Length: 234
Image (cartoon, rainbow, N blue to C red; front, top):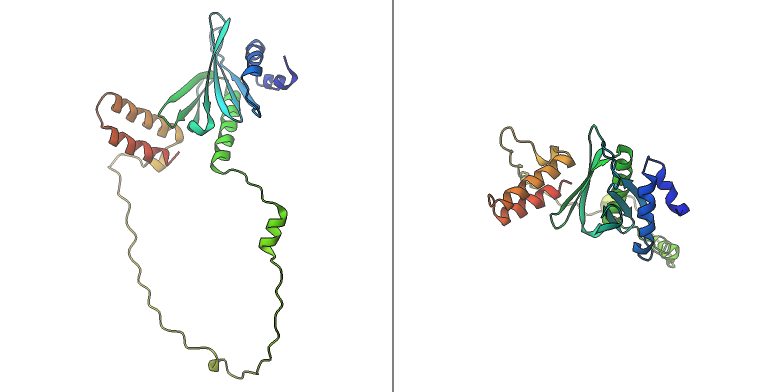
């Protein structure tokens, strides 16, 4: 196993699973792509071929062993296509989930809690970089903007002023009118505002609306409105 991947064995990852994944990743990684973290599924029962999640600086890769471990399916999702990520801690491990901008929800369960936290933190950092990209400006440009070249100031003779009233015009009276602020609609009794819900609850609510759409209980336009409103709070 390459030295660069041994660091992912610190949180009880299965060494055999990591070795199988890393042997394939060398050929899968794109130019400039770096692996940030690898989480390995750990079910209560003995799992010979567990699923894994690999996060890089470019995408999320889901690794699913097939044919008794002789082959492996890889499904990747670029960070540009991911709308949000979630972690739900259960008694036996955690669930790492993410939703794409095309309404696709992906969940991997039985991830050890510390691994789930690490992968969630890394995912949030990548999404934040997309929203707030780091831009560098040459120092010389910053200096020129802050301190432009000084212009020569012509000296002008001034006369002594004994009363400011002689040079200051009277300020015109200004009256300002304020329109009352619109009041936000009050939600129905017993229903919580979207702003009061956690990200996990918002994600569940989005999935419920998707099921209503699939069953023909709501129209596509209604679903799009619900989706847009819910995603604004994630």
